[in-house]
Length: 387
Image (cartoon, rainbow, N blue to C red; front, side, top):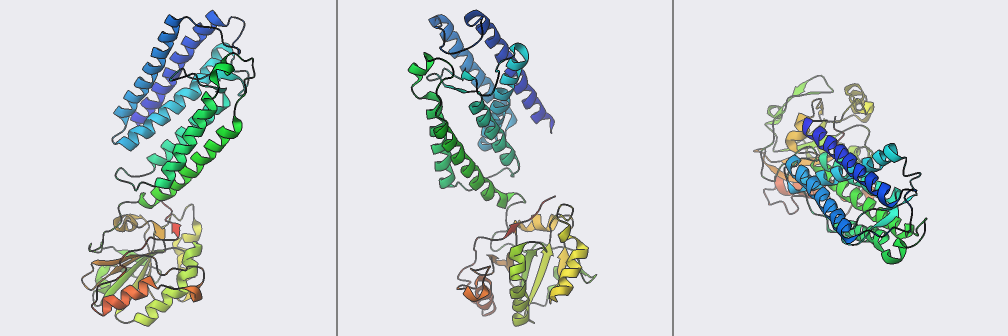
């Protein structure tokens, strides 16, 4: 944990203690026998002070999150994380100070803005855990622009509305009802499910940008010096006489790669000697021992690879290319400018059902001196396993 993040966490925990201590005093005044519904009436002056305290809390969390983050997305994620830690520790401190809540199903008055929020303690704790999870997922991505997924936004917005409805519905009657207060668990859980799906969509989308920005069409091929399973060291210089170079980020364990291996071998066979295929394995071999250099040698021998199979131990080559998946294709022309990027064809499971051979079509057009009609497709496969 870096120092700035540590300070943000400590601030949130300390802020939670401050909030809890104020609530302890309020409960001693209004609920000397213990906090329960129906709620006791509060004087207008005290109510205004309470609303001001809530606004001040939100402003302070916003301020420290703004200082911590560097972009709107990072600041928003930092705010959610700080809010989540603050909210969870608020209940932890209350439990330590006065022994409340007795259980996670005790009812609580959460907020007064814009109208009272009421729910069992478990509900805001779940929301806070999701806030922290969102920060963790966001922090795993590089700073910069990320694609906006409208579907994910609609799901998260709908989920937020449902959760707010579960907190705020029929508040007048619920304030005056006795504990336990009725709560719309079905609506709340549906909102949480929508949030979960939204986070899954956003995370999968961002996983593609974790290494670095992918090479743009027309970019020059980044050079490398990598050892192959045959014991030789390869760089771009080794393939300078080829009219086209296909760099494929590959591995051993990925089912997508295994499904394409025979097709890759066939492409090298059909387009030799003008075209050279080079496969590079950048996967973490500690958590994925099947992708170790020794296992690469076995796989290459078993499948009789007719192309170099190289080990990118530092993962620097994958980062230089902006590779995110296996298999991921980069096709370069004679001058080693990127002319095609994406996937091999449109059916990884069944070669006989392929309708569009993206890589072969691009090769045919490139070697014929034509403009490539489909220069880029989305990649499909397993994500590169980063260290």
